[in-house]
Image (cartoon, rainbow, N blue to C red; front, side, top):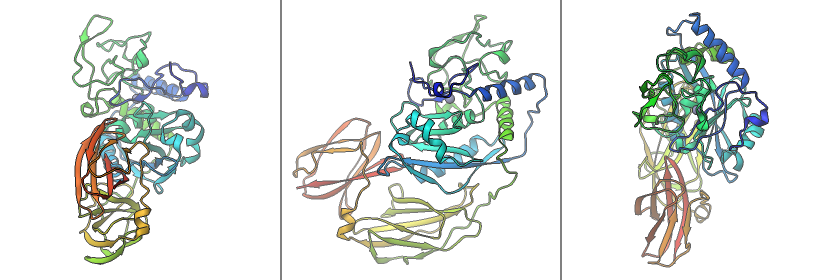
Length: 469
Ligand SMILES: [Zn+2]
């Protein structure tokens, strides 16, 4: 069985013991709701039964979100800012009906820690608390090899999300935030191949005392990831055959199937948020004008690649600036992708290449609608030191042999399905292809020289040098 993290916390379990989201994998995962949460949930569901809760739409609550981005001990593997910006927009869209609007609080917290990066449960129990910002929802993005995609740790009260499980339109974070605000799974009691004592019936006659305890979510017994509609029928205790509701975020249907929380779920989350007393009634959600790029001037050809200083104009109301730099203006391959709270940044690039850069300003509560301003271009010169300083390496990205001889076949193992690009030092693209996770892919290069191998995994780019002799 599993080393359940909650054993350490000695939590007495009454109800839904698992609260995990393993996207793309069928392995159940371990975590749970805390006993206090379960009591609160049960009490609130009692109020729902007694009709004491209005399920109508409530005013918008602005909820502070503290983002922590984990890297390994070498500072490799960060969740990309490009993905983070997308995720914040997606999550606010998912929570629109709930009346929750998340906003960024404080700067992005970058943490280099092998164990946390790998999603090690013991490390999370013991160390995550020290990084938390009180009075906010703390979300950690990690790159690790743990089996689960996302997990809410009660007690520590933090959410951990695996980078690879939170790309465009993913619902992993939405699901885990549901747990954070006290929601169990729709299939509560069935986790880890268990069968609950009381099985929820389709007619709703025992909906308050079985399953998730909500009466507006259909019975659900499926604790592995499933595509919608479910390919087989479930049978309830009355021998009624049915399919579970794939649209609910708190089920294990695939992300693309999920579109909503139920009314009772939304009321429950609002109740939990109220108890936390962390939300605000107002935040600046305006769309900001884009900053003016000041330096280097457009067309500048004299930038030291290892030390490029970029400056732009301040925009009133800006929480931060989103800076992107790309060779040849190909913004799908970002050389730099950063959130900067100031109006300048020093970045490290490489090679003698034309780079294009752009900046947008946004408020803490609106990362979505403010557009990038016009882009500007500069060309770098290569300092020998700069080339030697390329240190963006992903441990799991293996190239061998390296160095190798011209024409000799070499192998690349990528850590995940990725886009692979090989360029020479003039920036000429030698190869662009897709590589699969753990699959050896064979190539050869005929011209001797130094090459850069870039692997783009959902916007997270890693590079290694390859020497052909
Ligand atoms: Zn879950």
